[in-house]
Length: 382
Ligand SMILES: *Cc1c(COP(=O)(O)O)cnc(C)c1O
Image 1 (cartoon, rainbow, N blue to C red):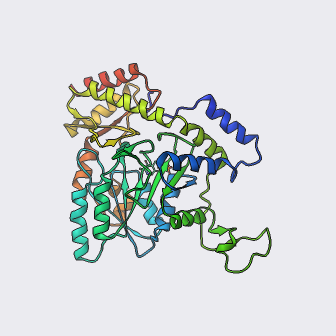
Image 2: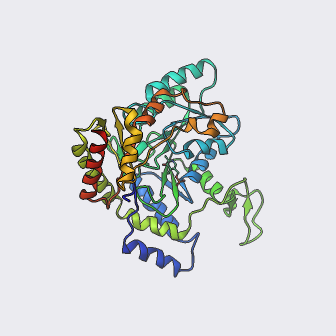
Image 3: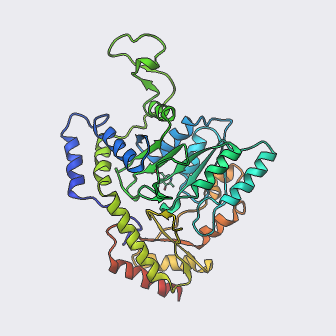
């Protein structure tokens, strides 16, 4: 079976992890700050906080921005459920903004319309979580303008988009957001096994996320409510979590980050080749605006005829091609239906869902495997 995504592990990655195994620290050692420093540098952000998953990082980001039971947070329905679940962890209300038909990213005009309605009823969101679907950045400049006009904060869920860029600057630089999140799950662009990272240029947000990542405990006397009792002393200042990354994970992530640019280049090359192969077929391939560089975590095609999606999907799977669908709209999941959402609420997202198939895309995908995907899909759609 050709999977839809697959990690690339080389001898250097293995050596980096083995080195940690032989060292003094399996966790809370030097590999974590080294990995954080590398990602901050690559993304041109000031602060980076490594976590045990992007889901944890999203939770910390919400908490650092003060999301609590009385808050409202909006996000995209075309995402992995974690983009919305992080809001629910804080006890806050989540709502969904419809997406653009082409990219599946949050639609700026739908957002503006929804914001105007919310202003009239005094129910504006506190935070908007923008998801860069498949590695293509949302229109961050427009989102940023709206955030000033309507007074909300911005988290970028860039789980798909490490290595991509927007208007010439790397995703993660937080030029138009408060916090950006990356995921290092094995199907993503670079991996640490499991892992995530939060990037920000705001020292207070960075400090809050660091504190909450490790139980809300500080060893810094400047934070304490009374003089230190001695070198052993620490204080728990808030209710935090154990969301720490291990050094084993950080060493793998750091080693992988050496090849980030190569991975993205290879993904872009394969995506361009798919674009050439698929152009005669009755489907729309991804169409990335010229001012955006997608890291192509996913290659999502939209069939012209949604009624043929299931048969095409089944034919690809039967031919040993591990296609997938990204994503089932979050608001239609039973958990979110229980909160009052339903089919019909977000028509563009639902139509997007009905048309899409994610084709295999990862750095080691060969051209002959790609040709096999193309010919199988062509036969299935003819
Ligand atoms: C993978 C993913 C996450 C969650 O990442 P984990 O590291 O597995 O917690 C969140 N949001 C999106 C859009 C994702 O694709």
